[in-house]
Image (tube, rainbow, N blue to C red; front, side, top):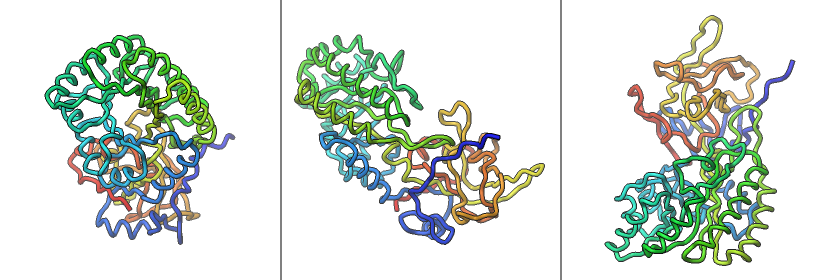
Amino acid sequence: MKTPAAHAPMHQFAVDNGELLIAGLPLSRVAARVGRTPFYAYDRQLLDRRVAELRQALPPAISLHYAMKANPMPALVGHMVRLVDGIDVASAGELQVALDAGADPAEISFAGPGKRDAELHQAVAAGILINIESFREVPVLAAASQALGLPARVAVRVNPDFELKSSGMKMGGGPKQFGVDTEHVPALLAEIATAGLAFEGFHLYAGSQNLRAEAIIEAQRQSFELARRLAEHAPAPVKFLNLGGGFGIPYFPGESHLDLAPIGVHLTTLVAEAAQHLPSARIVIELGRYLVGEAGLYVCRVIDRKLSRGHPYLVTDGGLHHHLAASGNFGQIIRKNYPVAIANRMGANDRETASVVGPLCTPLDLLGERMLLPVAEIGDLVVVFQSGAYGLTASPEKFLGHPEAVEILV
């Protein structure tokens, strides 16, 4: 009989005396400090380590941006601002968080398919780079530039005619709400020139959550070649070339960690080619989930233990209202379990196959389905790994009126 696939090892958090540690502290002590469950906890040391690993693997000429939609917690953004080269925002609300965190406006870029006129005006006033995704944005930006006496800094977000193969979420190729179709970009560049906007470059984002280095390399290669071709129509030399990200982390059984080494080798080649063909361009890699996802835990407490026709259910005070992704209702077609553990019974030999559920009146409120776990009791702490990205702010927190979750940076 074939053995079921296992989750990738979650070694980023240490264990001591049978209890999971975060930032070197027993999780039960952290829970006592927070004062209640559920909560999200993000580890500063792991954030530092992930950025350091990237710096070591990628060529120094590559600029590293944090896509803060992955986790916009203000304290975490403030920490990331000190680690990365720039911040990518997707709304005026995120822009304010980035500015409050001390991000340099010159290194903030703004993407999104439905930027409101007021948001575009705010972006011009802040002096950030705006990734144009529609012909509609050009006259709005021109009017804002004239009103403020500031040239709008712009790049063109391109909807390429290819996609990131094997990606969890495809952001380019075919009809998309994101960016401007490749074939229409020359006309858009002409309008940008006529409007007198300050053109700086291109933004290409083909897909996300990819664990195959060869697929990421192929998308980077195609994106670079496309930018070279489009640069021939640009009203100014390309200074900014955002090749997107796509770097994934393992969530589900059978998945493995991404190998950075071949990506670093390939980007070294691209940097050399850019020096020859786009000599003014700075190449940017935009990452969100990959930077913060593995540094976070979602922590909830068992409030009831039930047997239904012989199957154990661990009923917790957390659930899909705080962590929609872990419940399988945020993009999964076939539901799969995130890695889950009983934080105060790590390594226990007494195990059972149990399901972890929340307190909501819906069968969708499921954090772990038929998982082999240590036998847990009321009061034990349940953790969901890989919870540093697309957690609380990607969840219907107001659903059914249960208490909100806390977020902490430790």
